[in-house]
Length: 216
Image 1 (cartoon, rainbow, N blue to C red):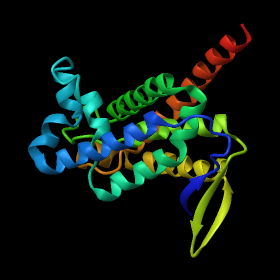
Image 2 (image 1 turned 45 degrees about the vertical axis):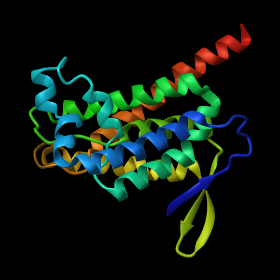
Image 3 (image 1 turned 90 degrees about the vertical axis):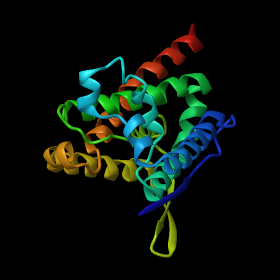
Image 4 (image 1 turned 30 degrees about the vertical axis):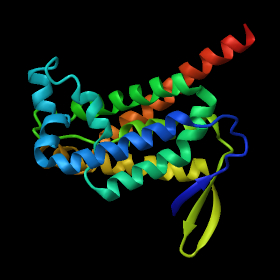
């Protein structure tokens, strides 16, 4: 199943932050391509280097969120952000969504760090932050439908199934790849899991705050 869209009929605002994040990721990727390995080495998050000098490499916590390992990595992440980000942004509001996205990205990075303390492998990608968006989506839109491409047909599938299958795969893959990823690189599954769980927790906090203001 390949997701291509969802139901936006209830959306009330223009998702300016989601569009801006997509634009920033694409722009950063072009800069990354022009800068090559030197740019990646400087701005990606490297666990061992960060632990040795947290203040010196503090910015890499954020710059690494906008870097990608290739066109497929970028395209997949931006597709998911485009499909699910706008609805979550609409529910949270622009400012809260921005904070939420960055916090999920940080949580994802630290989750991966916990399982790769001595690793010299650069960590990069928006996947962890976007995993947080997916976590928020299934809580905010439990009845949501996602259009997926299955073979040559487009069908409607509950978001709980689409996102549920994704996170289950992350858990199983993460358990099997902890040792290899820490030393040789690969998909940072623990970042996906950390970002997703952070998204769920933060959604309860952000949603609760908004509901309290609305009824106060």
